[in-house]
Image 1: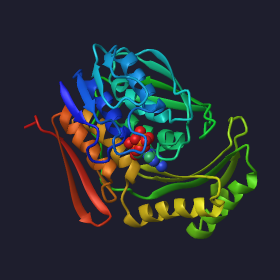
Image 2 (image 1 turned 30 degrees about the horizontal axis):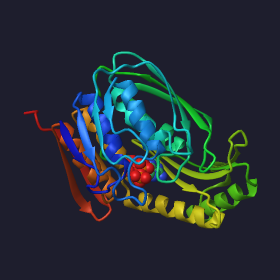
Image 3 (image 1 turned 60 degrees about the vertical axis):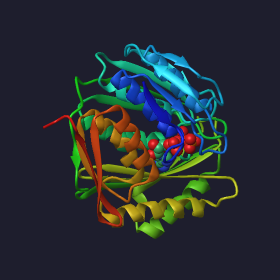
Length: 343
Ligand code: ATP
């Protein structure tokens, strides 16, 4: 049995989700201790428990320790069962992170899966739906599988109530991809979503994007998402280049001005554009696992985050891959994954 220390590195929920995903694809049982011990409220929160339940359903797994607040879990999958699933977090916890847990196994399963996910779709500190659909999944599709995601209703903290569907047409195995360059920029777009909040908030955010990045009016749109239970505000800045698309996000918060939300988001965009690398910091940690499944891959990215290095550690525990991170400049790193068993 693989034993995972949940307090290592970044010490958050990603260690658990990556372990669940890797256990499903390898068939290896694992025990994790000190789950989320670096967090203020350690142990399993609703979102993590839903991820455990989702992984248990997809992998017909035996599970011990699956309860709110639990800091230890044993997970033993038996067989991957693709099919139709409905996973609801039940709070505003991120349901894109639930997808992150079960998707790798479904990408290489033997038949199609159709999923309905409910909870938060646009949460800070988690992949927003737009990132998933426009940055992450297009790269997964370059590895072979077909995955389509449709947002039915955005869900924000604290009301939740978001919903999206995903169809996965798997591939027999994942193809290796290498993303050394960004290439020419093909499209730029900024969208400010407001749900049950004044449209003006979105307009103020987009003005900052235009003023600071010199973007033109027709690349910027306000979306009034009043079909969401809301209230919520989400700013999404998308850069589509020849070899990769990236999505940077900001979230409206009570007591924080629309201008501040937009300025912080623009800072991320400027850092990415000036580094001239294809892969941003979130995409980097999320690409590792599918690349490891493909038996290798590489990309250039910004300076490695703790999420990236921690995820690399967890992956090494389940799969025979070498993950190398080579610094070319302070904000230009090359990440390479190679299968250790290959000659
Ligand atoms: P915690 O234990 O911190 O409560 P958690 O389970 O919500 O955590 P983390 O362990 O911090 O999550 O992992 C968060 C994941 O969400 C990482 O894979 C990270 O790349 C991703 N993520 C965070 N913010 C963004 C963003 N703005 N865009 C895309 N992905 C993001």
